[in-house]
Length: 279
Image (cartoon, rainbow, N blue to C red; front, top):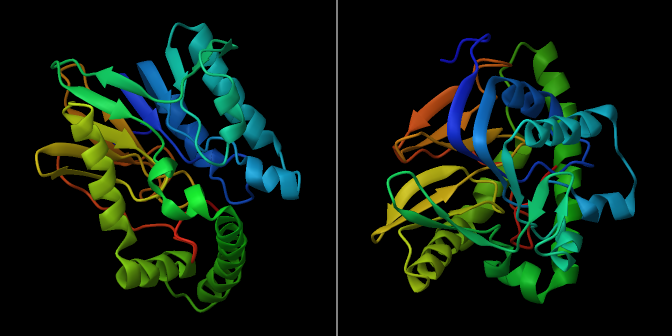
């Protein structure tokens, strides 16, 4: 466990799928995480802002501003911040190489770890057939996930009254879809193959909201997870080793860490369209 008052400093932090503008974005957990973690470089690996939802219904509470201000403040203090847009914040893909407020926008990049190993860093939506080729279906899946989260809220209230433990309907629904189409496994294989094609040692991505570190046929596959349900990030230590940090399970300021071992965090939700959406 991490003590609440402790601040940890890493060489690199990787965060994705915050979905600012979504009512279920866990800005409270992310702010707490950012207060207790510093890094020389911070990669924002896509879907930080949820442009899809903001187009449908503008929702931008103070917590969203606080997250942006916290990141900008870290940039002003000397951290390098690299923003790799995803499909939900794809409007930023029109500005590669642009710096705003100390944040650098790139489409994808190669990160060299302290031990000399190289990792392709990208969001990953380009390997999701639905998002790439059937955009309408992806939008419908996004709407379906909103409905799943609404069901979550009602069920959580009922289960609390009955003194039952929390159970996530959206996580259950995602698991059913995953079992039917094996989406996660196929996504991981394709992304790992892209890393192999670039002749690097591994890949770091987001998009599917499924935090894990594992080896796939000699390629180190690392997924950052999300800040909707799993509340996870990837950290690189000064010696080049990686750690998966889960900041939700033990409550604010007391996250659980898993260093270098393959770790599967209970997933969020995959829409019927195949794109794993935030809430």
